[in-house]
Image (cartoon, rainbow, N blue to C red):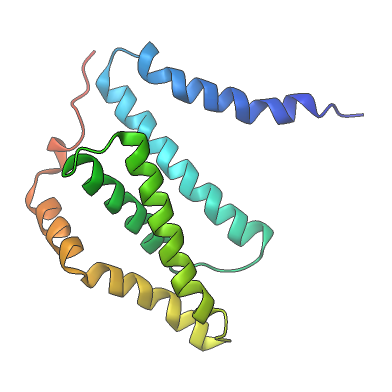
Length: 151
């Protein structure tokens, strides 16, 4: 018989290691790489729940991630909100937009639903602040956003 404790304990240990890593690692490069890995792991976890367990396809998943991330970044950098409050507000805003889009979209069937999801991504990319952020990102060099690796 298989024990339930190691399987249930592994996410807790992973979360504890991820939270302790910035304090243990002295190299900023490793911390930024681990942060990006953790963010992408959360996105994949959401896609796994939707695609793997529910069997539904999400073509607008990136738009909700972008809305939450952009709201969090604006609140913490422009308005000097604490990081945790900015992240919570970003999650709440993304959830509110998902609910506003999801309720009418659930009434669609077949190909209409498949067209509605990518159109949300198109609408999110065409918003003025997002276009400005994309323009700034494309004008900056890629090496400036990630700290250099130091041995």
